[in-house]
Amino acid sequence: MRKKIVAGNWKMNNNLNQTKELIEVLKAEINEVKLNNTRVIVAPSFVNLQEAIEGTKNTSIEIAAQNLHQAKNGAYTGEVSSEMLASIGVDIVILGHSERRTYFNETDEALSEKVATAIENGFDVIFCFGEQLEDREANNHFKVVESQLKNALFNLPSEAYSKIILAYEPVWAIGTGKTASADQAQEMHKFIRGLFVDAYGNDLANELSILYGGSVKPSNANEIFSKPDVDGGLIGGASLNAKDFSEIVKAI
Ligand code: PGA
Image 1: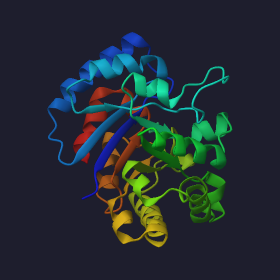
Image 2: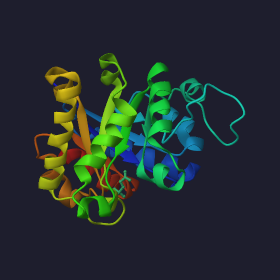
Image 3: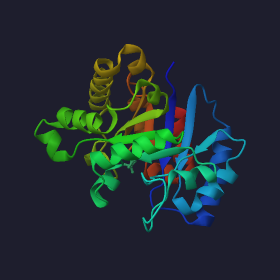
């Protein structure tokens, strides 16, 4: 049975003390929740990952990085390698977030390399993708999503998919307060699963967790998560508040 997943992307928020505090409150909140076949993941900034790893030892909260560099090591000033992350106990990474694509020019090609590096080094990858508003308005959203997935993921062997978590995030819904409706999310998630049925077969596609991201909050999580092809959420803004985030976890 495919896993349900709620992941919090903290983005460039929370200094060291705020990280410690949020982790402590989260532990107490999440402890109360019965996690049935559900993974709870949070992604603090690079500098606070080690603290987060220490703070969540022996809990059901997992820690992810928000990015990694595709090269093993070398002259890439300001970048962080998979080996560095692994050395402090991080084994999950978010790749392809729309903010990385938009502000840091991450292309499908670079993402394909990043995914390959992450998989080779034993990471789970939360792979983000999704259309811009103009794509949806021009009715190109299915095409855009299909090409993002094909370009970055379809060269992977089937075995790699036990490590891949998909996160469909329509860019127009990220941080805007505008959520895709539950029906829009289901329509796209079903389409995505269908692409994997065609490329890799039914069994693999049925095991893939497909998360929805974009202004998920306690008030809309239930409805979005009730859809059959929505296996959880990637949460930005609401993951910075332990109560809101745990409410969302409870909704799964
Ligand atoms: P949001 O962000 O929940 O603040 O819209 C989602 C994301 O960027 O992953």
